[in-house]
Amino acid sequence: MQKTALVPYAHLPRAHHDRHVLTSTVDVFGVAHWLLADRAPQPGGDVLPFDTLVVSVHPGGTVELTELSAVRARWPHLDRLPDGGFVVAASRARRYEDGNQVQVFDPLGRETSSFSVGDAIEHLLVDEAGHIWVGHFDENPSGIRRWSTTGHPLWTSDGADIPGLFDCYALNVSGNTAWACTYTDFPLVEIRPNRPDRSVRVWANQVRGAKAVAVHGDQVAFYGGYGEEQDRLAHGKLTESSVKPTDVGLLTLPDGSAPGHRRVVGRGSRIYVQAKPFTAWGVFDLSS
Image (cartoon, rainbow, N blue to C red):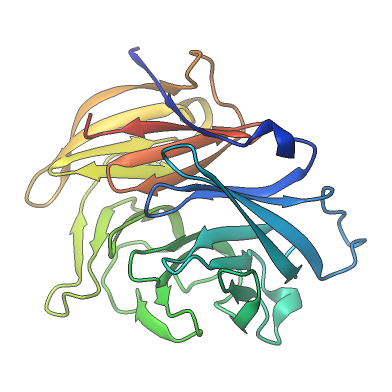
């Protein structure tokens, strides 16, 4: 089976390797971010809130540091806003029922708003307009939603006729468009909320269990799967109503090894992958 190696993309500077990586992401503009704490969270034992540091590495290698005060999520999601601020959200909402699940910070690291989006966050990605896309896993039937930074729902998958939407397995946000692949039917879904006449388009898809998707023109790639297919890279072509499979291979780390436990982020034609110890991002670009 053909192997495709990730291309090295961004590294956490060594000066910060002594801190614990709470989470990491790559934003809609291609900047990599690490949310760091002095130590790893302790289940049920940490004093909240606590201060954190965001280390941002731009595509040219410039490093930017932002201190965030009074973060409340032990196991958070992170993304950056176009104005330089950040969004931090707890994946589980049960302990944040007072509306403190999602925190929005300004560029100086000060909290400006907080709200809740519901339990069981699988994906949280900010688009170019500064709106927050949230995809839920199967313990929350909300599916996929788009929120303002003040907690107002701007788009919801309710009534969007997405077949078998019980779990948002893959979510890709690029520009102001989202692509998703959802359990149980695993269709490829395009969401354009600024197109009210037809905001959602659906293609039937044979690839099951993908954790990330990339789209470029009529080409699509699905990464991940169940069991022995967790490193699968499946290519396809968009037809009028379905994804036509064209090729299947494996996606590896730059050195050719399997990623193992990893984080993935989909952005347009790109799939970013980060393996333990979560200090480096690699990228697969469908457009190249």
